[in-house]
Image (cartoon, helix red, strand yellow):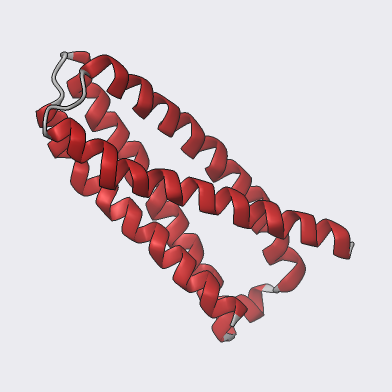
Length: 148
């Protein structure tokens, strides 16, 4: 069982890092470039489609692996009454926020790209993706607090 938990914890960490990293890259590099006019609608549409698919897969993997790890390490009582349990619940809320922000930001961006607009939709989605990047950073800080 320890080998399975180790594999799931590793998967959880790697997928989380890739997911958050891709969201941060999109918020810090891709959207500012699009807002500045350096990207056309077609390549940006492809990028946001890839990000959305990857985000959805990552959210499912994180839910399954995190659910298993939480279920084997905590009870309902310890989730509610211990510091680490509370941090797990905070991480879950941040995970839901990250997922929602990426979905809403992607939808706003795609709505504008459908009209062959780039700068305005990129500007409209930028705040949501920056919020998602902050949520991702907070997830890592929370994970560090749990481990430490």
